[in-house]
Amino acid sequence: MFHKQNIPATAPSGVENKSENNETTKEENTMSDTQQENTFSSSNPFQRPVTQGTAYGTAETTTSSDGRKLIIGKGITMSGEIENCDQLLVEGTVEATLNGAKLLDIAESGVFYGSVDIEEAIIAGRFEGDLTVDGRVTITATGTVTGTITYRELTVEAGANIEGKISSFASTANKTDTATADFSKLKAASKKSVSPKKADAA
Image (cartoon, rainbow, N blue to C red; front, side):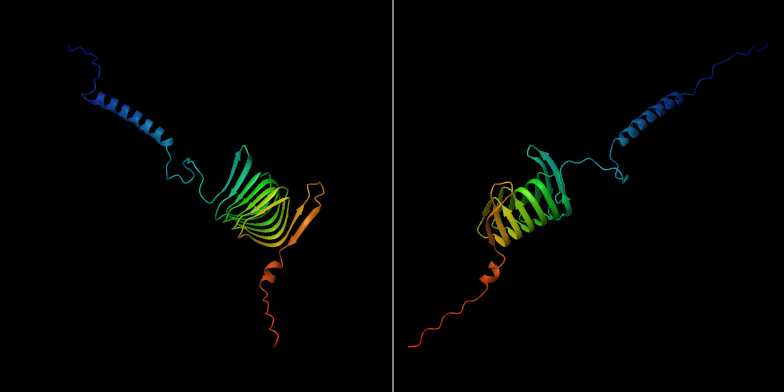
């Protein structure tokens, strides 16, 4: 008679190693997928890499020991009312009302249209409107001002262009006018020609 023996099934040679290799490959693929999740993919249009620095020609807001500073870069046009700004640097174009600031700095490339009530102003570009400065106004050689300026101290460099009315006020609460100069007719008067007097006949 034949006796049945239970012989445990054994895998052929190389099958077990292949299974282990598959598990290792799966682990590597899992790690690779995890690394891809942490890496920026250009195929995802909503994901952006983190970069440092500020692009040229943008409006930048910074905070320093001197207070909040707003920079309007070249090529930027801004309009409206500007508030909560201690320093405004204009390199582009601004059409706005600025109140309660400490410093307005208009660069050579900058243009400002509007009304300003400020402590100090430096104009190397172009300003058109009403400017009230409780401190010093500096108009550089490249600066052009058209409109009305009320100031406490004034510095004008040779070559600056002023068209309009400027007036200073005393250091009192009611800001009483103490001196006034009107430049609106100065340019027109300079163009008038003066005919020489004819010599008396002998």
